[in-house]
Length: 263
Image (spheres, rainbow, N blue to C red):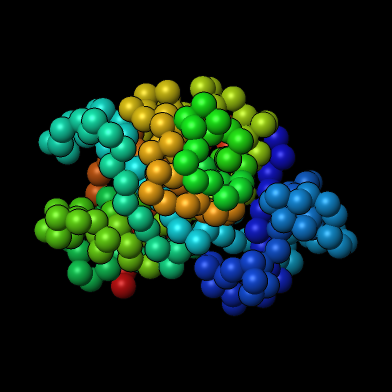
């Protein structure tokens, strides 16, 4: 399994550092990083760097984060919602990104913060009006996502921008794995809350497959290389508290672990 990372040599750089502002790409090998031009151009780009000398960033550098709500039937039911008949789409801002190991901030505006473990798709090339059967031609690879949600604000507002969009509300794995190296049907989404497994379901339980999601989204939205799609969370969502450690794992892909801190 080839683990691609985004990194910077600046320890003070924000997790939202863009490629244009100094983020670089590499392949993680034996505790070191072999720099490459980009996710989409794996040609060598400099000398090998010990991983201790870099700051690892979220694997994706999206212009937008497209999310799918209620994409597992049991999750829709556990929150008292109808099972959707077409993909339920919302967006998170890139400013919500944090990496594995970064803190997730529990905002003062909320009193009911939830985890939602998900599989993330990283888009490989510009996508518009994609056919469902061609989805693999437009997905570079997979990563892990925690769609952190202020459940009380989500319900209060009726639309989900505030409840889903706070800074730090999109922890994303520190590495990504190329789609060609992973059997999609074998993947599972697992979430651990303070060392207790609270979510565990195969991705084949999705109501809408990646192909259906891309076909639907690209009817109205152009996806760009590096964009991130969070494909929905299985049943088992629940509250986190200040001090909680939450780890989203997709075996065969990676993980993202974060601690919840007070604002």
